[in-house]
Image (cartoon, rainbow, N blue to C red; front, side, top):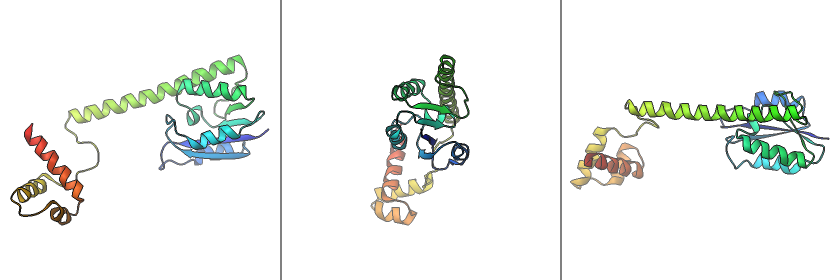
Length: 189
C-alpha cells in the first residue's frame, strides 16, 4: 500500500513548504502542483489519480488543497473509493470509510466551498466600491493625460508618427495607439 501525497498552491508566489513538511513524514511520494483549486486543468492531480492502485492512499493536508467544489470532491471520492483507493486528509483526522466520516467529509467540503465563495464575493464587492469611489484598478498607466494629449495633437498635425512618439515615450506602439483610442472614446462620451 502506497501513500501518495498531493500538494497544491494557487499561485507561483505561494510556497508548498507547509504542506510538504506535514506530508513528507507520512507519505511515500509527494506530487506538487501550482494551479487554482477551481481550475479544471490540473495535470499533476490527474497524473496522481491515474497512478493510484487499489489499496493505495491519496493524502492531502487540507481538503481545500485538493478540492474547493463539493460536487467535485464527492465525485472524486466515489471514483477513488470504487477503485479501492482510500483518501486521507491529515488536518481532518476522521475515517472517511465510515458513515460518520463520509458525512463529515461532505460538510467540510461544503464549508471550504462556502469560504471560497465568500472570499470571491467580498473581493468583488471591494472592487465595486473602489470603482464607485473613482479608484482606477489594475496596472498604472504608462502615459499620463498630458503625454496623450500632446501625442494626439502631434499625430493629427502629422508632426510625428505613432512609432516615433512611442519610442520617444519609451512605450510600445500598441500602448500609445490604445491610449489615443481610449482618449478619443472618452472625449466622445
